[in-house]
Length: 136
Image (cartoon, rainbow, N blue to C red; front, side, top):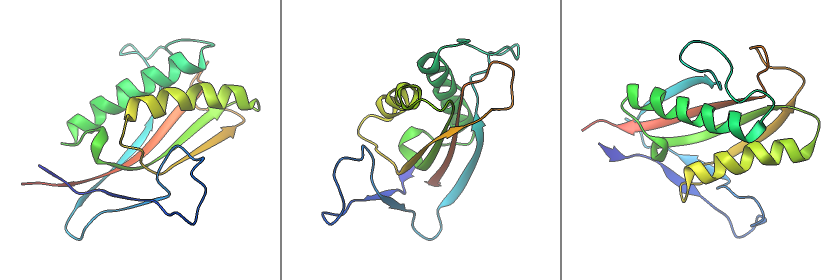
């Protein structure tokens, strides 16, 4: 499988953001739309109750599994949206740092959002993603 993603940066935009500002996938790439990765254990219980970073780590673990089942990996992710149930910037940053570190040098465009509530009991973090792959 060859990589389909091109991350785009611009010197005309601030370099403070810890992600590329845009990304493209070539014609013919297969797009993979992931449901929001939640911090759920295999038994359906919520992992790391009360811990933003812990929930972000579990959500990333679950995202890797979903990507693998789709024939993709983190390096194929073209964009993410990180949802954090909090009005405190510190909580958003705690979740974001885990997500950013999980992607390493593959700094796909991302949006970090504080939301009022998420779907599962005790859920604090959810991570949406789109990936693009070229099957060989």
